[in-house]
Image (cartoon, rainbow, N blue to C red; front, top):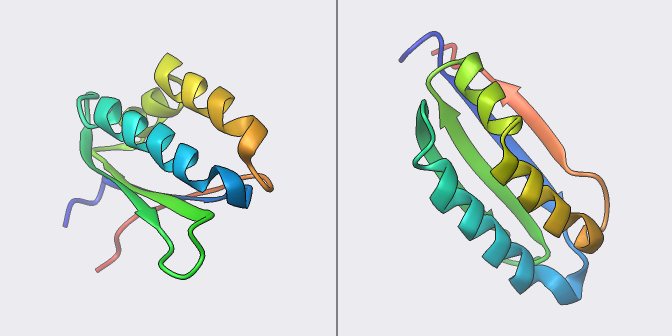
Length: 99
């Protein structure tokens, strides 16, 4: 366990008819994020019973890396694409491992 690592869970509710599009946007985001400095993990998850519920599960080396990712042009572009198809505001939470 690395004390400085930041784990981010971003949960998004998508308009039902746009679930596939959202997953495609997030896949592109994941591909770019995985090459970013300090990225240790970036997964895109889709709820099995409710496909319009998607999430990203991310691990960053430290808060600076997570901040740089969130402030990046590629995240801004993904959020701009996702904005019109969201069913509500995303819930983005940061965690640190304790055990």
